[in-house]
Length: 79
Length: 415
Image 1 (cartoon, rainbow over the protein chains, first blue to last red):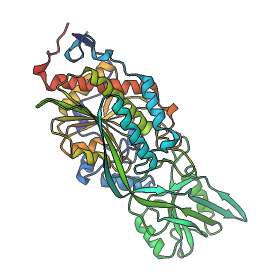
Image 2: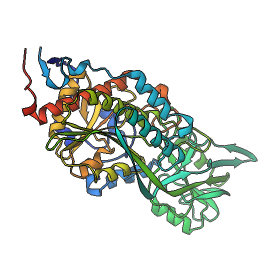
Image 3: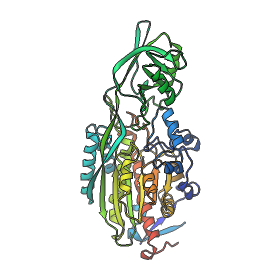
Image 4: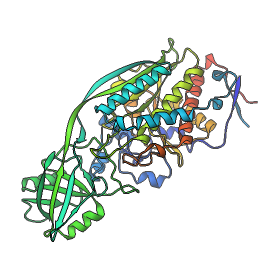
């Protein structure tokens, strides 16, 4: 039987359950801009795609407000 | 130091299974190659990529099906290079497509050049003019069309390298051509309104296409046992008519890592645990492939979607949906084991389609340098990121299997 060593780096920076309702505006539309969460400031600068709740309510990938924002920027959107 | 036993991996720890970086790099390079032409859904290159991926999965030991599905009206195609020229005092400046300007996805399809004076949107007389607006507004565009304007020019920023990223799905089209112009140029054009002449084309059409999901099953689950589905979309936004957009990062990198993940998991997960792969089409057009596939996924399946595995500059973004608590717990442990930091952030990718169907799903995303531009080349994909992503997903699946079927496996212990 093998063993793994738990390391001190890695894993969630915060409560994993936050991933069920993550902050809005990071990432993009489906396949949107770089999504790695380098910093809160950087991710919040993205224009699309709103919260998962908005997207689910729309039955797609993007919330309406975020979609309109993305379209306004000329980037387009999806879902 | 906490040492965690791993019943699933026999004599070796989970972290001992090293994904093959060279194998993953080869997949990235192949998917980014010229003949796949950026892999836009429904294109010849996209279909060829699907066929290649099916063969590749079969060689890895999977039973593969190609599942075709229609996408109607959602995909925009730039079928010739758009043109934008500005003439002032008999001097004409030809602007550079995707650097200085690009298609706006609400544009009408106008292949023949339209030439007219330059005006601003609040001018009283817009007939026969290209109209500069300060931001996109469908209502103002409709008003301009009704007033006889030739087209609308709106400002747009570029990425850090000076490109305008391409997308293939957008809003409803309006009744006149629309171009997005680099903000600094747009500002300068405003200063020449009333003096300059603009000639432009926007060869952009909506196309109905057939998407193709590549579904590989390594083993079905035994009754009541856990099943793991690992997914990544393989479609890109497609090449421009005269320029490659190789889509190496978004999402050849994710596809490569997911295929390698499945290959490794096939050797270490116990036989009763189901294992399948979905390489999805039509994501760039709105998650169509996953919306289609989610209808056929059995209850009891946990989904791990990877969108972007090219570079990890900080933490990987994670979004979860559906009853995904066991997945998140496993992912957290896996992140610690393999040293990948994770942060809850919106991941608008195929995972949302599975979650919307009530399935437990997580989406994981790392950086995608050159995102949806010609700069998204295979050399932008870092081998260490591919390895980190594959190790993360492998470890997550292993820890999930241990946690979901605890009676089958020894409990973790300290030593």
